[in-house]
Length: 146
Image 1 (spheres, rainbow, N blue to C red):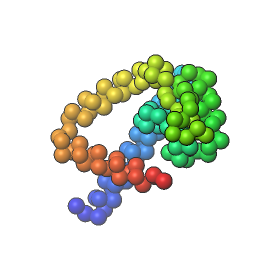
Image 2 (image 1 turned 135 degrees about the vertical axis):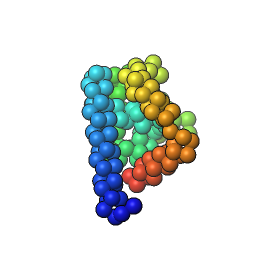
Image 3 (image 1 turned 45 degrees about the vertical axis):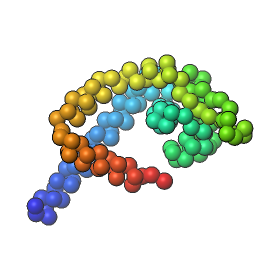
Image 4 (image 1 turned 90 degrees about the vertical axis):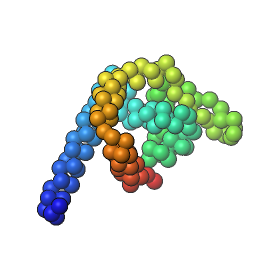
């Protein structure tokens, strides 16, 4: 493939990634507003859901927010019934934060159609293609880690 053609394909791919990200952000904003939260709150809940549980310090490290910022987010999420803070059995000076399953289910319900569509999209790819796509996202995500 020519250098010009490769550059054009790379440019097109970057544009499609940017469209995907923008669309996801705007949809996530609507979900946040639906629950009376803000986008940062729902994304912290998303991170917590993937982790299962975390300390506020771990959430701060994973999100890039300050510990004070995480405290404010957790206050809002707890008031809205989405998370529960409990004593950390491994460190009495710390807390463990867990999502509230029933409240989390209400948020997850907003994504059912998207997950269904992604499942149908994934079904159209071979195992080898899916491994390539997964590898791409793992590498792309690791670029922002830390």
